Length: 301
Image 1 (cartoon, helix red, strand yellow):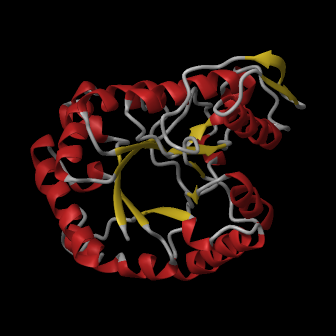
Image 2 (image 1 turned 90 degrees about the horizontal axis):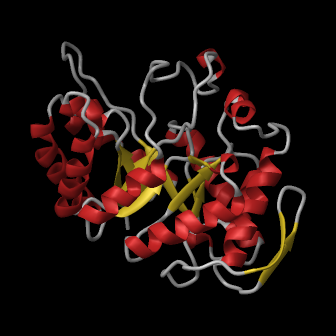
């Protein structure tokens, strides 16, 4: 079944820069039946935006990057069904035990609606400013995930790793979702990363937008799940959609964009993410936008 997600980056522009309006928009998306909402994370920004590995960086240096888990808590308070996610949370910038507590608290507040997206980021400057080594970021993330899963299932709990260690600690509350919080990863499409996701993850958030290339990567991901003895069908893939612009138009065309999404679905994506600020110029256009993408979802599932 295909699901639709919205990324709220840039949506405050529809409210004249008032980010509190985005919480109202999240409520509208929830009421319209949108499946998921995600927010992007940067704790701080360095000045070398040219180091962004996926082309020109889409936001100016002074863009306000609101703290994701704080925002999702606000969204949880005004919504009932929409799942709360990130794309992605740069998890190594948070202490492991604090991350476990934050995610568990959000899951309790939302009554089990968290599907967290984790990644390592691309800026060394963020690690430097946080007093953390850039070199062991993968190890730090791996151990964070292990700590979260441990604290969500055992008490007292003990852990001895390279980046975090503790003995006989108790951490409550725990997530209300059976089996803990689903974890998706925004990582490069490498054999090692696919094995990492298959080991302890539930989904992948790729940056690739070419359906033919994406199909190869998704097959490799699901092969990795099978190699670990897991059902490949459980691997979720959330893909962002590039807006299509018709000749002579000054804004993206939603219908043309929707017509091109079938290639992503055929490639294996099962969650399609839209950035409303790419199609809408005012907040008043959001209800119609949400209604259209959920109607499209219903037509293809």
